[in-house]
Image 1 (cartoon, rainbow, N blue to C red):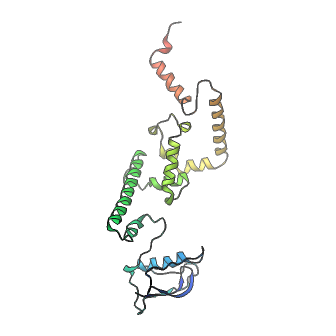
Image 2: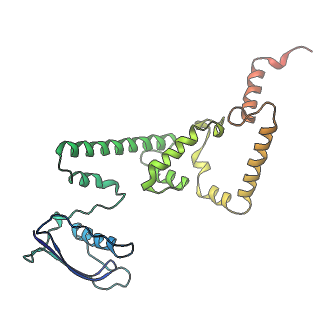
Image 3: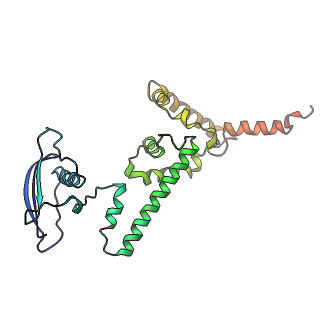
Length: 247
């Protein structure tokens, strides 16, 4: 193919475009333009054609028209179109086909498959630890990202933040994982209660006062020993007869 002949009208926001792209001297063409100039709409049109979907104009509902042919006016086949969207988790296999070196291509695909498999296994274990069955529709990954304020493309940044907090001794708590009921703590009713009225202010006030008490205490230290530890120590001493001594 020496020329790609483009005609688009009312395609995902593109009002009208008619352009020939010359490939006679080079097999690469770069379209560079500022944000908001319909580059994404251009790619979305190709994506719809590739997937056999109807090209649309969703804002005004205008009828879409397009023609993508070579210099002989032969339509480009959907099978010959590849669209790679940014942050598309499923794109790595297609990206791998862009590599000329077969060994590197296979290594690239295998690495990404391994990462995906590890991710799925990790969230499967998290789901099980939260007492959800494998058939449950609960999505541990989406819930985690939502709870921590991250999007799917920032998954590894989210995991890194969680790792840093887990390794922060000042944030350690004497409560064990098995003592926490995720279904009770994290549900819509609890979230509504915490975010409405003065609940969040009262929780913040409690946290500040508790921190002050820890700082003033001669025996307690944040992240090392707190009131929960004292209760455990008291129980242990009582069970071992510490308080049974004669007067």
